[in-house]
Image (tube, rainbow, N blue to C red; front, side, top):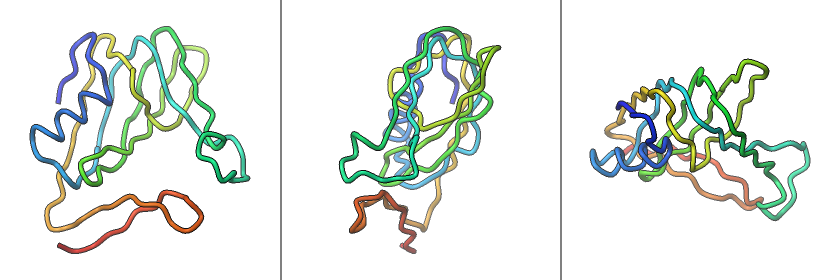
Length: 134
């Protein structure tokens, strides 16, 4: 899929999954430029019970070159990570909503037929993936 200037990245990927009925799949390639960068990562080796204390969220302004966006699509919902560079620093983390394409974005989504990918919480409330043949 091609992102035009001003398109929202994660939101556009979700729309493409809906439009093309991608329930299970992978984002195998994602490159482009962003006008801002919204992401989170886990900054600690301890896992507090409450989800809100696990993640450190960043909302960074300015132009960012995206080296990669990849991850899985389970139950139609993308779980994606990215690596980006702004000329001074490189960051990596979980792609959040609100990232705006600057010049362009090129995303390749590969649907997977015959396999069900499911993200769920286990007894420790951590997200994990389950693979089940259909």
